[in-house]
Every structure is written in C-alpha cells, then in structure tokens.
Image 1: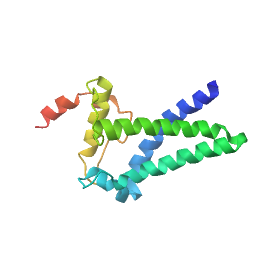
Image 2: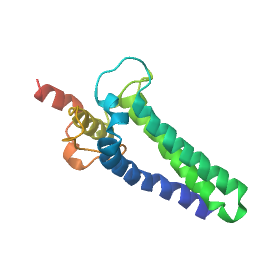
Image 3: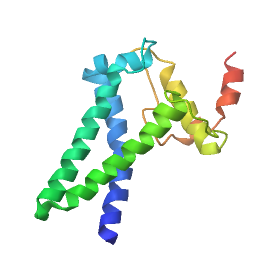
Image 4: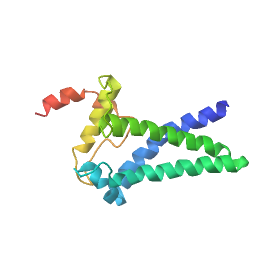
Amino acid sequence: MLLNVALVLGTFLFMEGVAWFTHKYVMHGFLWNWHRDHHNHHKGFFERNDLFAVVFSLTAIGLIVAGVEIPELNYLAWIGAGVTLYGFFYFVFHDIIVHRRVKLKFDTSGRYMQRIMRAHYIHHKVHTKEGAEAFGFLYAPRKYDRSVKDSMKNSK
C-alpha cells in the first residue's frame, strides 16, 4: 500500500517536470498551433489548447486500464492515478483560479498563490511562440515572490 501511495505522489511531482518540458518545448514548440489561442483572445469557452488535456487524460486512462487489466503491470494504475491527480490540480489552479474559466471564488492572497499567479501572468504577457518565461504550472521560482497586486501597481 505504501508503495502505491509513493507511486501516486512521485508521479504527481514528476508531472510538474513533464508539464514544464511539454509547455516549453512542445506547446511553445512544434504544437504552438494548438497552444496559440491560449495566449491570445478568442471566442468561446473551449480552446484548441484543451487538446493537451485530452492527450494527458487519454494517457492517464491508458495507464489505469493497463494496470487494472494486466496484473503484472498493476503499478501502471497507480502511475495513472498520479497523472490524474496532477491533471485535477492543474485544472483547478490553471483553468479555475488563474484564468477564471469556471467562476468560483478562491482566496489567492497567500504567498504561494501570489507567486504562482504572478509567474503565470508574466508568462502570458508574451503572445508569441518565442520569448515567454515561467513554464511551470504548480511551481514557480522565488523570483516571482512579489505579489500580483504589487506588480499590477508597478506596471501602470
């Protein structure tokens, strides 16, 4: 049981690196055409960028199904659960809290939330494939510690 928990949590942590790499080299690389609308205004609720969520979801589902159906590979189900957990946190943070795609109230005054939101807003200042920084989703370096409210005041 402890091994299964470690697989879920380890995969969750590993996924931040996978997401960073995918964001920097795939989304801002050869699949920019999927990601572009996320950096630019568009009509409608859905974005072409949402295809990345579909790809990660299908990956998680495939891992879980393989782990359940093939007893020798049961660890894959726990890895799939870790991918799913990361996807849930990503959706809540990125789509609900930062981009407000679903209108729910959250307290974002904490130091962590201010740091990660500021990093994400700085990332979105760039509307092109090149030149962006801060590619993480749930982690941002300390250089983004200044509050979002302070940075908004300073940019006016």
